[in-house]
Length: 320
Image (cartoon, rainbow, N blue to C red; front, side):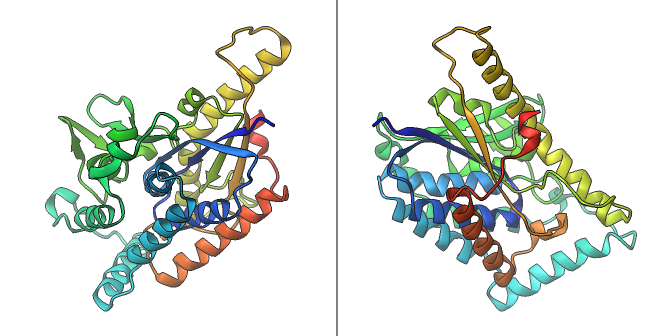
């Protein structure tokens, strides 16, 4: 029996990507034998989760992927006394900006502590120097999104090109971090480009693309406060490129079904979503409280179980 070829796309969302880690860990724990994972993609925190997963897959050991995801998010949590105070101060400051006209400071005028800490975490958990040796002809592909801030061009870092600098570039949120120089070009967060890269995954010829979705598609009530409006604006912006790419795949599926497109290079692809179903706000994307991250990972585990059992509904917008 031929395997179903699967590609996984991880939407970026800062601390909310602890949910992504929970989903991936559960998928890898109970990975269906009839499925073959052929590609991963991601932006920002989703790109980090995709890369951690990929390292284990290069070694053909999903338990390695599960361990790396758990260890990274444990180390990324604000567990020490000083780190807890820094996290509390950052979250509190972000919340107060909804009510008070507080000063904003360019990241170029502040110590580069945040990026240095993230870079150290990446170095600790990802063996960048060994990646080229681990890649084989049949290895799954990896695609990480970022945007060239000067030209405005979307960029995909692939395979061995996924370096420490590339991941920092994909996670370079402009109001928090400085732009990252990769081979002479300056990059900002992948949230401004393809969040996550989806259409590029078609190169791996998947039968299905599973999208781990951080930003909710729908809201029940009209946002009226400044915080609610800001939340919804960021959710819509974060989903814009994702649904544009999905609509392109959906249209190709329609043309194939109609017989209007006859080309062996194209094949029908089913797009499925594993969404966050917690009430979260934009500000919590910078919250690294250990209990909050653990709650997100547990929710990810539950959603992955529901997805594999067929209880998670398809996203209606993907088919419009």
